[in-house]
Amino acid sequence: MIEALRSDEIIHRLGGRFKLCALIQRRLKELVVDGARPLVEREGRTDLELVIEEITQGKIVPEWVDATDEKASTGPGWPVE
Image (cartoon, rainbow, N blue to C red; front, side, top):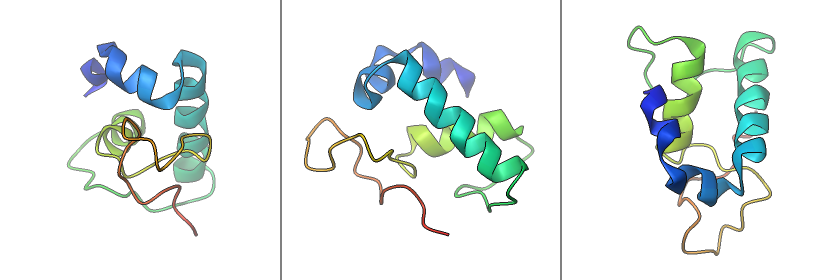
């Protein structure tokens, strides 16, 4: 799961390592502190692994990624709660 972070594709898609880190932190806070529901099945994964899977599957797309960009994920956008 965390091996997915070794790929430069996900880093370029989100606009850099710092933006990826910010996205991971924001989503972790939503899951742990705010009690948001996961967008993928937990299947025994840690919260960090869960967030990374949500990002790699395109379930989470931050607002700074242009949805019309072909390189951007085709996910539904940042989840609305």
